[in-house]
Length: 153
Length: 153
DNA sequence: CAAATAAAGTCTCATAACGCAACCAAATAC
DNA sequence: GTATTTGGTTGCGTTATGAGACTTTATTTG
Image 1 (cartoon, rainbow over the protein chains, first blue to last red):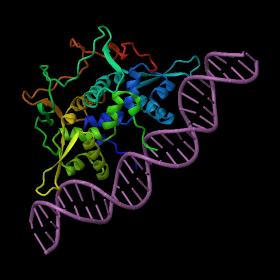
Image 2 (cartoon, helix red, strand yellow; image 1 turned 90 degrees about the vertical axis):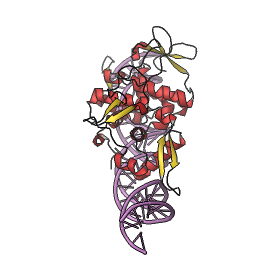
Image 3 (spheres, each protein chain N blue to C red; image 1 turned 45 degrees about the vertical axis):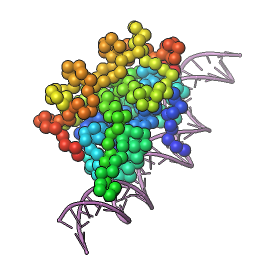
């Protein structure tokens, strides 16, 4: 009996969670965004078990989120680098950070600032095409014919 | 031996994942954003095992993401409703949706549109205080004194 | 050059989490 | 008054996770 796969749910959120929805993957990705590239550095900074780290890195590579590149002279030193797909998870990581800071207080000794100006970044917000901030209640989930979905969907 | 807790990592992303970082929680929340409120409806729409759903709902209630309210005449019919904290995860859910749509193709038969105009919402982006879109490389992670963090941090 | 250390895994084993199905009790529907 | 719905709980087998020891090349140190 395997873990339930979400492929059949016809939902892109489920599909995303299939790739990065476990406890560790997003932390590995966040760490990669901090600049970490080597196996041991991931291990030391996250305190993750080596076998689990190994499994997560492989899976992220398989899914195209990380790339494993040889950097040793003779091919036994590797680096795990974010791909474009991996870098594009920046929004997700920032969304989680900001949510946690807002609701659990800032447990983080780290700040995220714009490189050129040194200023803190703006809070993320879902926006309409016109640029207005939108909450859950300001949007509608519609099917392919544009019909609103009912509550049990 | 319990699952590794992320509290000691001093990282708000880790802290967020502690609350909603398992396979199911964000799907439950997304479903709640669609309007689902009853135990059976979550069960039917997600296909989650009943004991797991039970555990997830309780944990989300404990963490203040959902609220359990009596709706029956005599108190055995319940609804699980998003709190403000839960609704604020909208950004995270949308970020995951959009990422998955961009990189895995749209596996979803569902669209997210602005309620008033019916138009599709804009792509999420991390922005500077001035409003420019920022990628991972345009930001710096700095410590509390403003010093940039090194790669292994 | 030899020995030591490091990098990147792999293996084993114990425990925790998950998935499935059956069971249960109260409230509602018929 | 019986059947069904709702919101669970219990048992059991399978899978995932965590800790730590072990392995294998490469590089560094003496």
